Image (cartoon, rainbow, N blue to C red):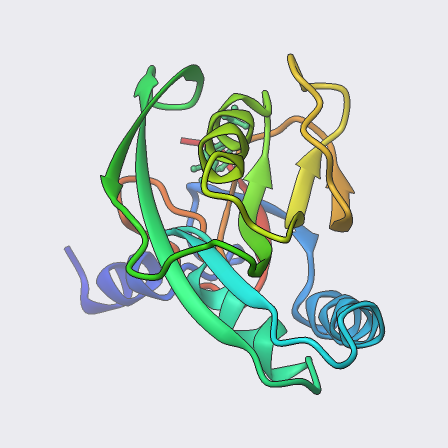
Length: 189
Ligand code: 5GP
């Protein structure tokens, strides 16, 4: 393999990596929408200290950029879940791989999710978190796949509604690759 082939694979540039398709959300669009979401959350939670609960691993970039767009004291915790199902479809049976460190009692919780497809993963998580007595429980999802939801979890904040194609980048992976792309694009593999 030539050195240029290796760098093409590593760079994840859709012009050079044949596995990647077209850009669905560009870097500039992400920046602008996240600034808007940050302002909205700042207004909605004024005088409060929201607790951002990030769903690992996909939400880590979004959560970090969103938090910097919020002009309030914010606290953070993380959950990691693993969904049973095929490589690209969830079954709705979810296992908590890493639970929260903090108590939710009386807290205003904002769940930060990368993408809502069937909605089953988020639905399970919300039911679980609701039993822990938070003062409020909202969701901020970066991406929602249009028309794919089998259940409709309540989504207070949505970044972008996108078509059903499988996407990677900006936190989203295939076998742990492509998470560091600064934009979201389709995956052809
Ligand atoms: P759901 O339970 O809503 O069907 O699936 C949610 C989870 O499936 C997401 O948190 C994500 O891990 C994964 N997922 C769904 N659609 C995509 C996609 O287009 N690309 C990637 N990389 N993961 C996806």
